[in-house]
Length: 551
Image 1 (cartoon, helix red, strand yellow):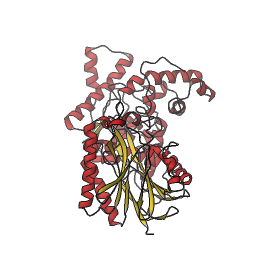
Image 2 (cartoon, helix red, strand yellow):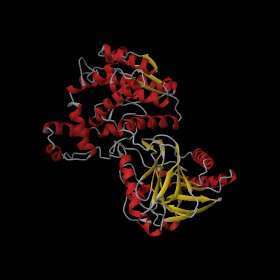
Image 3 (cartoon, one colour):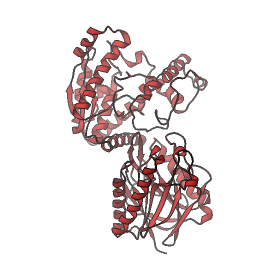
Image 4 (cartoon, helix red, strand yellow):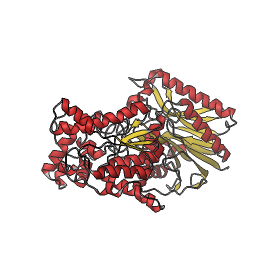
């Protein structure tokens, strides 16, 4: 029996860019053929990009996707690649009598060889939780599809089908499958790679087959797909692992379900959480900028840790020459906030300018009498005007620099420091902001370079500097306490009583929970940002704005 050389193609599709996505697939198949592969598998919905959300309910979109699939089949044969077996993901129209409500299409895996389709598999389990809403968008399938290739039996399934019991996956063992091919659009979360690998290993052992798990890579709005495609044998042993956060082509030789050999050189080792989180943020920002046609970004540089981390992420994502930082001091700004901002800009080499807001604020105050919070927020809104003016006149994408902890408790000025088109650290709690800043500096220092983030930005007490001597801890609990409490209330959905049982102070609980619930209206109007945790604000957590429940 000949050895089957399998290639897993990790591509970075753009939703709706049917021609560009097809070109990526064709290039990967050509590269796989040059490496003597005979079977190439791609991620979920690689033809259209993923998720397509309510585009799935638009017949013109689905027919265009099917036309692109047909073009791919023709192009493969024309490029003398028709002898390869290629497995791609694409939405296809469901039979008229299967459609219901909004859903008109299947989420499908299509197997191509010799200029024809060998068959189609339709995703069975349609996730309807967290960031997913596929039950709204797709029609479920219920049959396993298996095909022969060079004497081995391959079955195809899609993503969620291996996360849930039952359905076609349960038929694999009885179908004498040698290798299960899993097409995936699995978004990144910290530590999710461990859960994925455990799931794939469990499937291999339970269904007595090798498993090849092909995932997408790239940023799509607020989701980041990290790749990390894997192959395990029938005993659950990890054979090969693709790179995270980059396009990749992973090659494996298969003799049978227990004899698989890695061809491409990869370490297969898991990277640490800080590395993963930081690279997810970089990829999410880079792809949002490039896929939406921007060339550069602009952000306010306050000298604080949040704006510093955002600036460094942006510099790593799109190049420091495309990052425009603006210091906007007020009469309350400390000398160190200005010097730390300039120090940061010099360290990373980004564009930098100062636009003092004192006269703007004074002009406004001369016409309208303001005091207390309204007067403080005026400063933030003047800064927003400057940033958006720069965005409008020079074409930059404005970055808002708020972190997850601030968003949770509403510690931001609506139409002020919350203004912007993308929020790089929206899903990064304050304690993790410090952790990632230190990590990024250590990476630079390990290769003899200066850390990009000034030490003073990391060590000094955080402050919005909207009044003399102000620091965040004047009005918020210590950040380690606050983040731990928010972890329970937001991430784990714990009640007041459960939080009390963990030793949190009752008055602190009541105050923080009240702040979180009352800030929902602000979060609804905020910019999107890359999801890296299991409970990000936005798609993950959907609560009513008008809400009097406190428990």
